[in-house]
Image 1: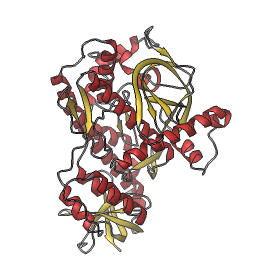
Image 2: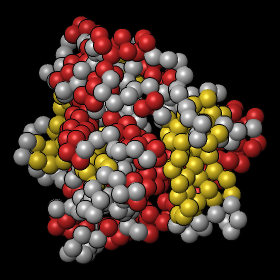
Image 3: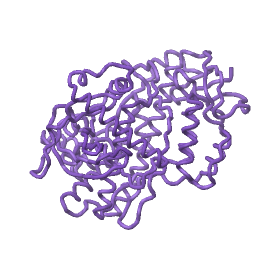
Image 4: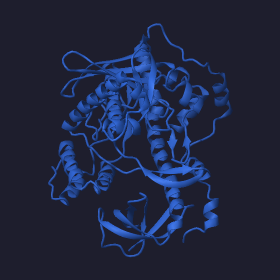
Length: 489
């Protein structure tokens, strides 16, 4: 049964979000010692005389419209022979959050920022993550720079990792830059004012295109799952917004993959242990093979990333509407990503989905604790001092960060379901177009197309299967449990 209107108006999504993160194992409140440390922090990040001064370069950031926790900025320039030098600067969070400090202990416990759509529960206080340790525009900041040269064929050379002073010259957004890059919108104001910035972004786009083409040649998987985030205004859910891919998001994703690869290879080359981000060779490959057979495609008996990538590319072109659901099925069969320790002489498994062997997470130290640990490992290596963590400590951190990342995903999913149930509560009886997303022993699930909300299909629905288009009638919602119930129409 759907909740009465009075109950819905009283349903507090912010309280529900807080409850979900606490139940997920997170502590959303700063302990007194952490608050005291925050109050005593210096306003400036300490630097070193050996830092390179790169503040004169035309750096920019591209992120979500509302993001202020800017972990990285980018710049590129052409080099002889057709190459493009790409530099990614990463905020030096460790400078103000030293290991073992109260803020660090609290960040280690939570492991990650939790984004619920209704509220954000930051890993670090906003005074840090959105200000003093953010690569905010027009502010001098200390950063770790990962550098590489991208050749015409997408191969990389001349990698480098070093400390530098940088200055973000333009805070840009995915939507604004993406629309401009693909010709569907005007140039963002900062780009329109600076012709050199426009040239800079076009050069970055070309470098990203080369990097992506190279990865795809090596068997990287292009997946497109739908993430529907609640739109909340004045405490009320007004819609669900699906995150859509675009050229600006692709650009940043390509640069982050490349930068994290450079960092992983740098630590390995220096004989240092590190935390790696891996997706193992899928144990459920036979099920992926049978999934391909449903579409008349014969995949190899042994895991083959290139063959799977070709199959996915063909399905995306043939049926773009259903491709997100095929993507979701493949993601589940690949298995989740995890953090593991890479020690000298004992290589980590690699990342099957990205088709890279050396890959870490080090580009988001304001948001993920594994990245902050990686940053400390890099800084110690650059300084020529012993690693700040033992292998056993790194192993424990890797396990905990994996658990907390999974918990954050579950908490966000709970809140998204509650928000969707609130949004749809006034539409009982409405018929929607949808797609079957799951058929399990517990029932059949479908996602309606607009808004992109998922629910349980009541009664006997055994004659439908994953990927089938259906018409469903909304019969009930329960925001307190995040339930949405449909019936086949």
